[in-house]
Length: 282
Image (cartoon, rainbow, N blue to C red):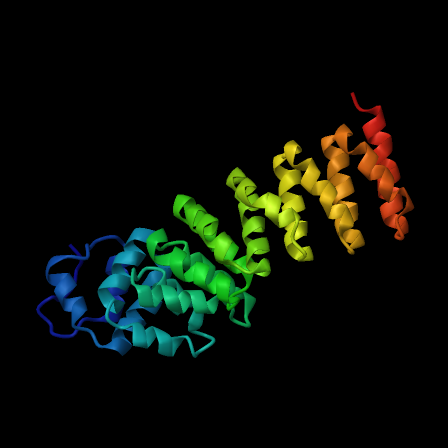
């Protein structure tokens, strides 16, 4: 047992720090009741002193004991650039919808280090709390897609299923971002969406669909790849040719020949190389 004066009405911060870091106390019994009675300022001082030396489990227990009902205090501390990172770490240990919503909002913070800290804190929370607000943020374009993706890809099955469910309701931008995340997570279920995506008039969505065909080697989607030759974008036509070349789709030969006379010289060069590969493939 820690050498704490539990009969005293006021707990000494230094005693708490020493006892916690030396592992001589548990967050239960008389000590727990005494900690519950500290005021917000003292609670924050204890956190600042003790948290850096604690392992994850002890840090979680201490934060929940001292700050579970003090989220307004953490909001206040986030206004101070010297305190914001510690406040974010604490929010990662408080399993509540409010904590998650605050952290999701921080994913679009102007300071990249704050974004990264918020993403790390979100990963500590259960997927059932994190996934819905992340999908909403993705759909509403209120958070950087890269940050949303970083956390969602850490949410396992629930995150993957949420992306698949959100795809049909998304606009072109959201659909493209979802395809990108499904590629990163190596989820072949994105195939469900690729035929329509490859026929889209949105260049970003088509580009991500082509990326998916290449990544998963969906050979049978070559007719849809060929349809993208009608695009006004030289980038789209060139990417489609490169993928047909990599997949060695000999059936596309006659269609590739049509691009030998394309208005864009780079597309013509891609078509020439693609034909050469296709004619030499077995």
